Amino acid sequence: MNRAQLIDKLKEQLAQLEQEVLRHDAALAPQQRKLIQDVERFNDGLFIQSGAQLAPCIGQIAKDIKQLEQRLTLGLSAATIVASCERIQDRFTAVKRALTTTGINLKSATQARQSARNRSHQRQKQAHNSSGFDWIAAGVMQNSHQLYEELNKHLNWARKIESKIAQLETGLDNCHSADKIKLQNEILLMHRRLGKCRQAISYIEDRIQAFERPYQSQNR
Image 1 (tube, rainbow, N blue to C red):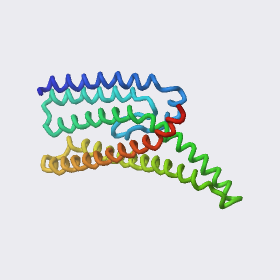
Image 2: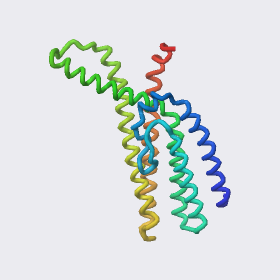
Image 3: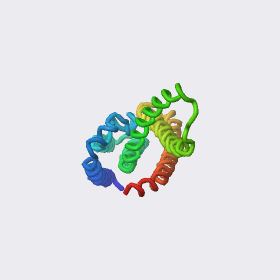
Image 4: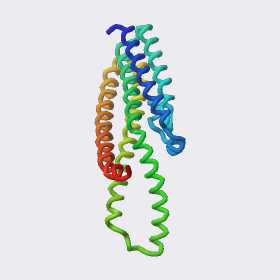
């Protein structure tokens, strides 16, 4: 694949993704937008964006593709081009993942809000009575809460790894040739860790969906 074909393919992928994002954003109800309007869907090193709507991400990917096109024209090193391509693909992957997990983000935000209310109520209750829990119901709620806590923990880990990758890639253009191999190996290692973390996130999200499916069927 030559340079022109590479850029054309990336622009085609972006155009397809943009249509998916526009449909996603249009389907969001106002109350859903408000619920997670302050939630950071991505690490700052990956996107400057928060909330339910994903359209701002498209413009940022377009800038990356334009920057890659300029770097190709300038004939920069292969390592720099590879790093740019990997960053663009990471952004594509992150947006595609966000498209499928908005529902879970909404549920997580609802769960966090309800948990805060429950903790306040529980503190008041414990001041008067240290017993009388409904253990079966508590067990069900505890499992659901633990799943979302585990999800949030892995999402935080992923954001930290993404931030580290962005930091390393920024230094790649400016480091001496003797240090490039070491830095490239560090980037590769962090990408592997990020991949494992994303696999864990996918597994947890699947467990959440499996856990909630019986309740969704009952509410239809």
